[in-house]
Length: 289
Image 1 (tube, rainbow, N blue to C red):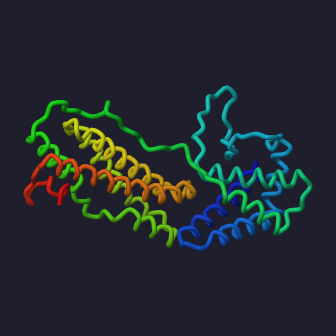
Image 2: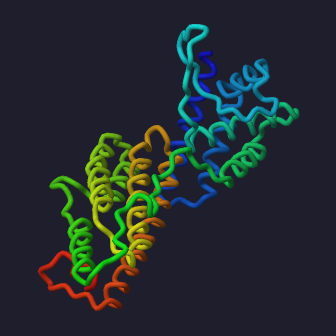
């Protein structure tokens, strides 16, 4: 069992190296080279021993289970609930299975073979099991009958929620993540809890707002965009344990924020179409300016 733990440690170091490289915008070939080098370097050490142990257990015979570190001395009959595999778990599994398959076929893991393994694993998508919570019309308070006052009240309520100032020590989430990627200092990620709390508060506040029927679709879009941002930041915060998921999260964050901008544009169009007006001192003004 110590050999398995050592092999997983190699895989973790390898993956984290890819994480740092990607966040410094090095060309993809550099990520491939890093994986290939690590695979070849590990060929005569722990990873090779791990492959042999897996073969002896029959784990390489087509299993799709995620290989996890052993749990210490669990009594027989004890119910064990394993956490769903992260994106990093899936990448590590793929690296190891591809390596084992190469060894079983009798191919020497040369630099060329190691590069082929790296090309294979890097070219595939790896998603974790965590997804953002989604909302529908069933989750909001819809006003089927509404007046101009209701429309303007809605605008002021939403404007106040989305323009709420950040906490005193809160920093832009991508800046925090970049600081971590450049320094490797995991402690900086704790500050993302402030960002997560602020976006969660926006979602809970928006759920309490009465929504005129004409805004139902855009309001749901607001909720789901903000929920997606929460999910992305949480995954960034989990970078030390799931670096691949964190890389994915930065892309998801950019996509979700673009969706948020589109939804706010749709809200603005509805306010203008309905001739709703807000003075510059009202919270709703931010939605139409």
